[in-house]
Length: 144
Image (cartoon, rainbow, N blue to C red; front, side, top):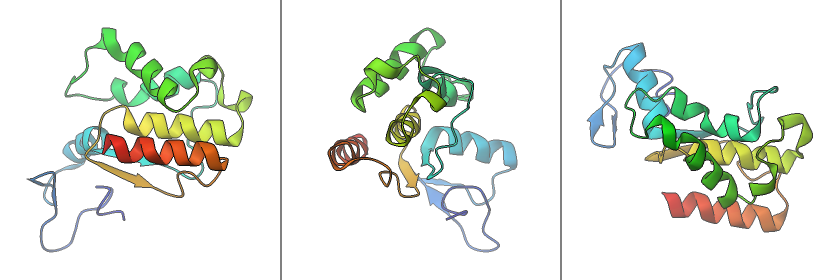
């Protein structure tokens, strides 16, 4: 999983992601690949505690050196993502003000905001109720 997620490099052979050989890239180049081509959904959410849901979702855009999305559109993109996962009314809430399922949906929205070619998920819907889990699973599939 570390190699697939560009967290480690293979000791031999090559690994192509989206048609690009990433096996020989340096740390900075791998970080750019991780930010633009891979969406991570962590079981423990990994949300910034003193940051709103909206800002947590915008975070990958801040680190996107490709500037695929202009800065003036970041907030609207994040709002749209939160709407898609059913959190339009929770955008200004910090993680501790959200249920576990809501925090997981923020993490899902954050993973999808850069329109990655691959999602790496560790039980991405494990903390959601069955209705939310089905909806968010469909959102992940639809964006792929």
